Length: 169
Image 1 (cartoon, rainbow, N blue to C red):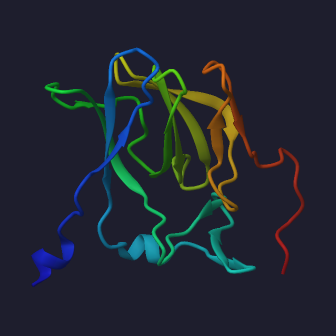
Image 2 (cartoon, rainbow, N blue to C red; image 1 turned 90 degrees about the horizontal axis):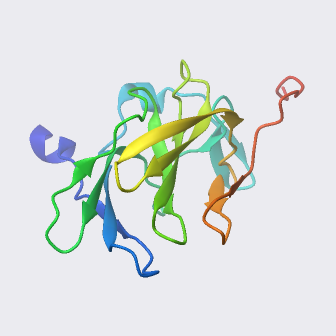
């Protein structure tokens, strides 16, 4: 019974846009049930949202917010999945999105910086290598933290203010 409860869910496929380039899918492996460390994270509740005030990441909700443990890129129709490298070992992937031209993806990862950060990585779809955007700490409380601009060269993000006061009591 324990093995059944701890089994990983089926991977999710996030298909690339079709602008004329190669057709690909992001294979995103969700976590299963939350572990004790995840359940012990700090949590605030505000206006129906539950979020971690340290990482500014929305917490899993019953209606389907999913954290991913790993990502891979697979070419269609016969390619084998290439694991994405360069993402941090610590932390949980909170979101991933294809650029409009399908050449890159963005990924946000919460808890990567000694459990405190929520950062941004850009993934090259050809090489499956992720590059961290230093100094960008994103806020994913009210929805996706980042998205692509239509030119596929720039992203926009909700960020955490560099200077902020103490948490409310």
